[in-house]
Length: 255
Ligand code: URA
Image (cartoon, rainbow, N blue to C red; front, side, top):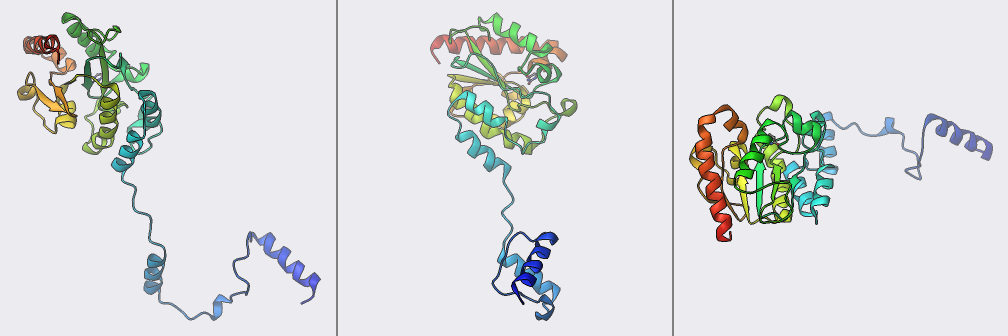
């Protein structure tokens, strides 16, 4: 083949879409021995094993542990793609109040108002929560760590129709919540409602758990009724008041 013919052939390959040369010698695949389909599939599989299916919880843990500040944690959570709830939500709801506060409240998930505003506990349940906290001298607007609170949820995205979160959704978010607690560094935690207790204590049954000191994420924790539950069951406010006084007494003791 002369130079001009070789060049024409090369141009023809380029026009067909060839972008690189992968061997010095051409291979005529019509002359290769036939490999039965099943054997070929097995050979392909052993030559290039598929990458292990990504474990969303392990990815969440690695991302959360890499966050050195609350700002970094919020940013990294915003890039976490494995939880489908984010696709139906308007906003990521990270936290409100004062980080460094002695008390950290952990609710369930944003509702409609929280999703719209991007802040936790701003709807009716949140208004009741503010009243409850105010009754024992605590406020999310306060800067003094002794009287401030820091508030977040187990899930940062609103579940569709406010449905309960799936166990896998909780599992994916837990590494972020645990890191959130470590970075906010409260003296104690108040898990509010069943979902929060399930996530942080591995136990459900808020009616039995509430008002009893336990431990979560290595810190003293006092489970309480969720304010949305109190809005529907006003008679339970009596027990919630008892729990608030218990929280206040513990804060006065020092931890
Ligand atoms: N309920 C919650 O658990 N969290 C919110 O932020 C609002 C309602």
